[in-house]
Length: 391
Image 1 (cartoon, rainbow, N blue to C red):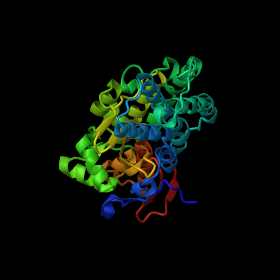
Image 2: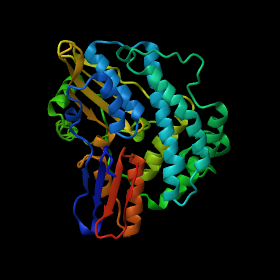
Image 3: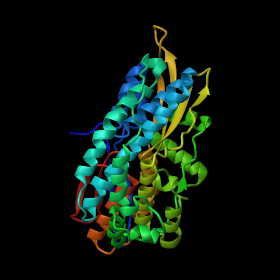
Image 4: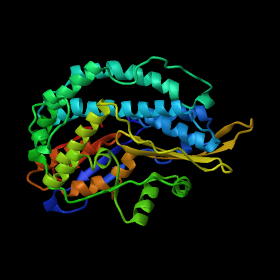
């Protein structure tokens, strides 16, 4: 069955055989064709289904863009709930990556039992927050959370911290100490070291999209074309995600300045951000923006697990005088990171060729750490080793 979210095809030639890395995508690029003339409630319900993961962040990005276009301002409590929901969703997905996805790639046991405990607590909580904090004025619902929790309980938080970082339950000390600790963090960093390589490519943090750029995005209606134009205008390759968010955190900085290996640096960023999320730190919020109240256009940006998510839209009135979608465009983190000329393509091209098998393993780990939001198919050119994996 083909997912409506699409997939990535990544072709990686061995260095000694030449040729560029090729990344192609079947991700939906023209969402306006699906949502044109549709009522707002329909779009709110459908957008997260279309993009498969980060569904809470997708809905919140849509809601904020609609509010901007309508001239609404969400209450402070609503926005706080939204920020909490996005951060809890990121914590869930980071833990899934560390406990389920990465260990088997490095010969380590999968932590099904611990992840099940996380799911039992976080999924019902996220669903309740989702109902309570989305476009209250548009959907005409108002739910009170009252004394409901907004985080994992302390015992599970401590259990996960101990699992990841050993008896300290926190990533303390130097990066070298983190690498050698007895928790899962140390095991992951040690196991990844033989597959790592010196990092020479440095991508740039994606800046906030302003109103003029959001208008351009709506005009192009194609994230691929928009990213190409935006990157060319700034003469940079932009990346978004945990590494750039954690770039100046002490342990990540140490890894970068003292060790400077591609996979280890990204693994460290993932571990550090997971610890911060476990302690209740929330992602920074990009303020909701409206382009102009006259044209009924708005856009919003939400920092998600995988990076910056941008929604831009414009509205019109239907025959009944109700607002419906005139135009909409969405740029997901995967669109930036796995653009044909983006960070993933450049980093994959730098993998040294030791053997076909090792090149494949290193490439797979890099892709998993950058973390696309759709399935991908990786092929090492002239290698019989190829397979499909889900993000």
